[in-house]
Length: 102
Image 1 (spheres, one colour):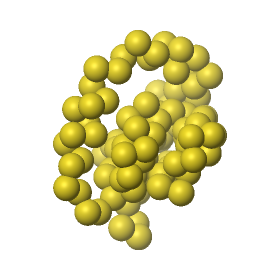
Image 2 (image 1 turned 45 degrees about the vertical axis):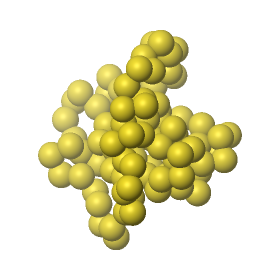
Image 3 (image 1 turned 135 degrees about the horizontal axis):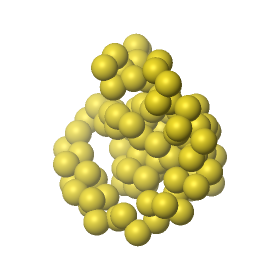
Image 4 (image 1 turned 180 degrees about the vertical axis):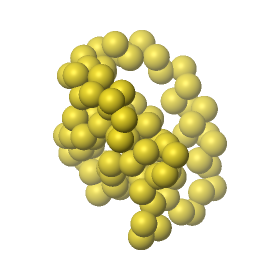
């Protein structure tokens, strides 16, 4: 991991408020998953802005991010939205995603 991961650890708590108005792409990603029978992989999943709506639509999601703080928030939000059974939040890098077991 490089030093850039620290910036995401630091902004995890404010990330959702910062992205609150960005929702126009969610339908696009859910639509792209139509017909998928395997898990959908989201790289740089952050706090679950896309992963949770995918899971709410019934998809299994592997949510990868390099920030444990972001993933902890994703896990909490997934639990609150009753989608935690569909989301596998994992530490991973874009260059070498952790997809073992899939």
